[in-house]
Length: 50
Image (tube, rainbow, N blue to C red):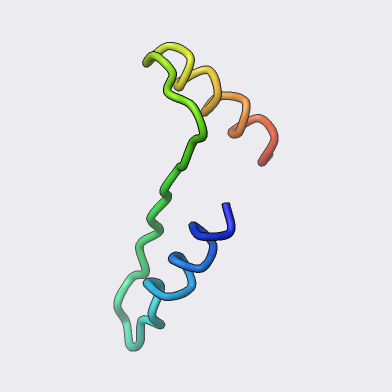
């Protein structure tokens, strides 16, 4: 998690002018899961963020 935070800080250089900033989301994991489980976890994250 810490490595992802550091990477996000390094790669999110400030955009200037009228350019629209795009957000990029990267997920890391300590285990491999199937597609259904992954989507379930994304759903949980979405509910927690609202």
